[in-house]
Image (cartoon, rainbow, N blue to C red; front, top):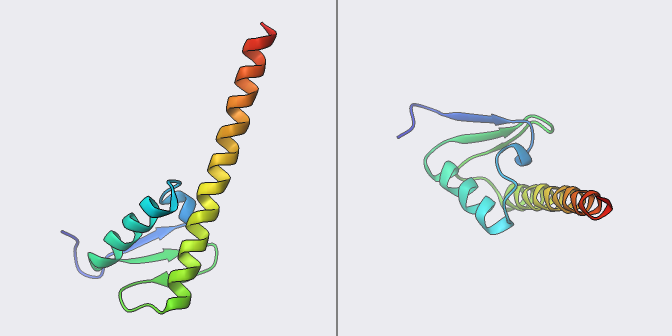
Length: 88
């Protein structure tokens, strides 16, 4: 249970979750449906119950970008580790 007017401040959605979009969206909606407001500091946007379609789409796009960025970084690290292992 959350207190009165809870606010979650995050720099960007990648600080909340880098999971696949469906999982990140579920977490986002769970937090919102508990009555919290999420504020992203990089753009000053506020997300809460009753937000409009544009805000929801913006959040989804940012969550997907966070996941894609994380996946790229993971792939690079994996490739580099494999290359080191192969070179002995």
